[in-house]
Image (cartoon, rainbow, N blue to C red; front, side, top):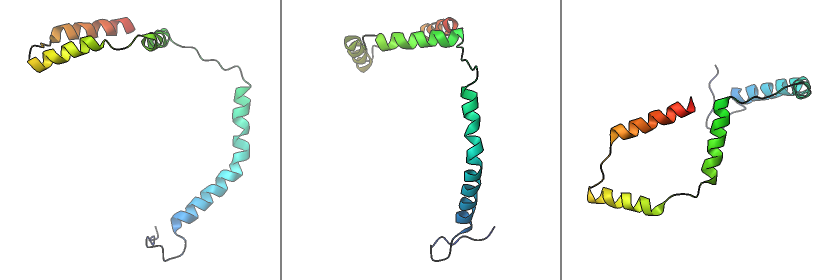
Length: 105
């Protein structure tokens, strides 16, 4: 590989020449490449969603329709954390995660 003049005082670099050559090749093949997608669009292509994807889509709709965050509950939990009274039950969290995972399967 030839050294490249990064100061900009020399002539065109090898990178510039490579880019020009690639651009010329792309222009030459562009005409045939654009014909292929048109043929694919005209075909009998379909998309089918799995049951899991359908359920996830329904859940996303439910989340978008939800009223939002219960600010009073958030503030109560924030206060319990600040007071040092908030205890985390790792078993309860694990059980909820397992239930959630089972619902998706």
